[in-house]
Length: 179
Image (cartoon, rainbow, N blue to C red; front, side):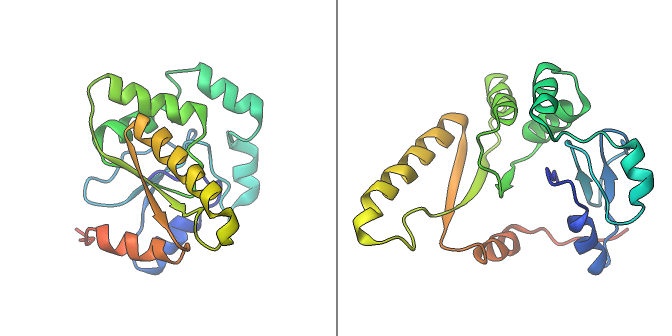
């Protein structure tokens, strides 16, 4: 799992169901668990606990300059991790605008090298919950999003509200088996 958020809420959610994930950040690289869950934080992480230690040592991609540095370093840990995930798995993007130029470059690079893994992105449907008078404009926006993402090889999934993300995750989840 790749998490661009700086928090450790995903890890905490796994712990509540009895799954201890491995965590990989630019400063805490780890060996992914083959039969377990690994959460990659390519932009760094600020855990809720042990904050003092983490704040002194963390490399967080937060500012525009940080993003530019990441974009200009094709061999950075973050870029290699993302490219590895894009070429090894089908990816489901949730909560991203899909406008990050570095991510788009990495998706495009993986496809140009012959990797054809199907990727998906979840968006709230811009045509829902809008007045009829604005619906045609929102439909054009939705069509533009679809065309843009399909040019990258990413299939958009439009949902009516974010509660549907839970249903999507449950429908694609693979049961976890602890060793």
